[in-house]
Structures are given as C-alpha cells and as structure tokens.
Image (tube, rainbow, N blue to C red):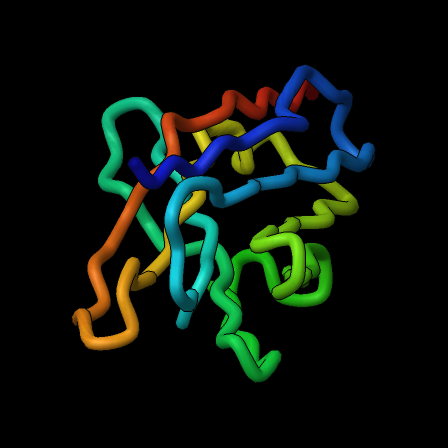
Amino acid sequence: QVQLVESGGGLVQAGGSLRLSCAASGSIFSINVMGWYRQAPGKERELVAAITSGGSTNYADSVKGRFTISRDNAKKGVYLQMNSLKPEDTAVYYCNADLKVRSWGVFYNYWGQGTQVTVSS
C-alpha cells in the first residue's frame, strides 16, 4: 500500500516561513514527478510546484521567488520551503507523486491527505 504523508503545516504570520515535507512509503519501484498542490476554500486545486527525478522544477507564477521545491530520491521525499508567506497562500497543501510499484508497471498518480497552511495578516 503506497502512502504519501505530509507534515509541516501550521499557522504563521505574513512574512514568515514554513517548510512542508512529504514522504512516500510502501512498495515503490520508482518515482517520476513529485509536486505540491494547494486548495483554498471555494477555489480549485492548483499546482504550486513540481520537480522531476532529475531535479527540473516548475513553479506557479504566484510563488516564484518565494517558494523552493526540493526532493531526496533516496528518502522518497519532497519538500517545499515557503518564505515571505502571504495571507493568500492560506490553503490545504497536498503532496502528489507519479510512481510505479513494479519495474514493468505504469506510473500512477497518488495524493497525500493534505496539510493546512494558514497565514495571518
């Protein structure tokens, strides 16, 4: 059973920082893209940042220059360093990964349970 478990959310004042972590566990053969999405109340889920197994990154325009995504392939983990946080960053943040459990299998998409980030003004 594959699981993605997030941690690191919380309440922070505007201008502050938080670091989110996500660890993949279970029988995993390989992981391709890992990323972070977020969903604010009344809004659709949106991509925040993504990173390939080779380290190529992609960011939403709204977080460029403030957030940094990284990963540790050996630990099957992905991280999101969030600096200069704004109230509009308030949302539930979800970890996401494309992975396969067998060498001959195909990649499937998995989601974590989400972690709340609240930025007060």
